[in-house]
Image 1 (cartoon, rainbow, N blue to C red):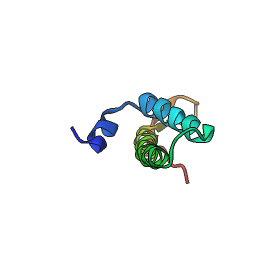
Image 2 (image 1 turned 180 degrees about the horizontal axis):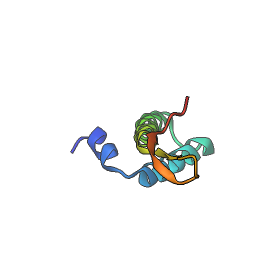
Image 3 (image 1 turned 45 degrees about the vertical axis):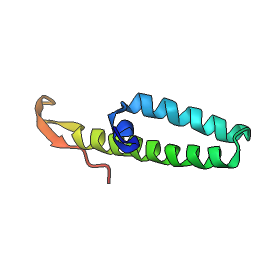
Length: 81
């Protein structure tokens, strides 16, 4: 399993938790330069995975349409714009 596929296999929550740990490690300043670069690269992959998962979830959200009586009449896709 490649590193990219390992990141893709993580749930949103797992990826976010690991990303938070990486940020904390980088902010501490305790990582050597080579380690900091590797952490940054891993963090970027995790950030992209989290963004992709959020985009996919947003695309699945549907808004409930109500009829004139206030009763549910169907759904429409979520439109963030």
